[in-house]
Length: 198
Length: 201
Image (cartoon, rainbow over all chains, first blue to last red):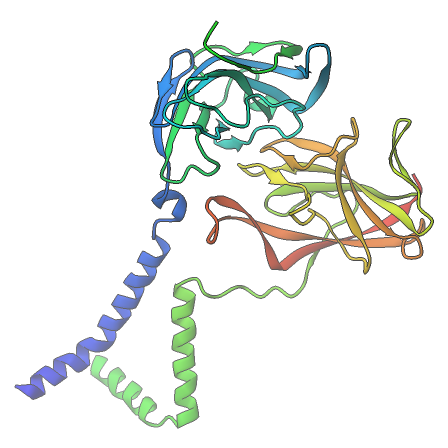
């Protein structure tokens, strides 16, 4: 009996080890990555209607596109800056629901992710959004013109979250392609305002 | 047939000496390491590209126009960087296109520059847009722009008529391990090299 068992073990051990190592290697290459494990919880909505998550309530009111933008810096001064591609400005109202939040946003356009433009001379929102004091401002992105003109290729979404990387937090994913973009040669951008909607 | 083969392998294995057995074990270890992605290809020879020839490092496609040497850097009448007795400014004029799906850094305070200048003494000052001389820290996906990469170098080391060598490191879009997110990581071994003659502007 022990001889038979030893024979079977001897015959099976090597192929079984090979199969186990191969299976382990396959599994290793298919392990979930941190951006899947810690992905934010998306709350979907669209332009024109309020989108409410756990920390933020955001209403996108307008999406504007122009190669040049005149940013108001104060009462009398302004700065006109031309985009590398074209400016895409998302006007929105942001409210914090329970506590003060550092709001961040990025833009998804046809599979590409755009961060807010560093070349814009003014801030679109305050450093912090406090509860009870909604802010009316904008996010500005410098995007490749061929992706939005003559028609938008692929999804156009703004993703708004309450901290820098959004790990395991709520994130508002707002679809912007349900209305045609407001296009011009130059657009005027007002400073952000704090207070109830006017 | 099968049992014959088995007997042959058994015989071969039994005939092995100890050092030869170690070779077999080492072979098996290398094979298993390769299965788990633990082996890198060794490519000792760098790629070479030339002025006016587009080159893609995975993230950006660059096309170098020229290298210029300047006493001071001016935007119109405004002096951006003043002349000094010991240093000159080296400018590399190139178009850059971000081919990737995320924002790419052209080299700022924290990140290393897109071009790695092979000079013993240098200070990278940033990339500047030729159209309006504003600094370009980062370029969004699918955007292209003509920029000048600027370095401050000792006057004795770079002059018009000489050449400078620059490296562009190969980049790969990867999941971050220590921090969170996806970003371009430069290779530590694979790069392409360009030799550019330095001219007066």
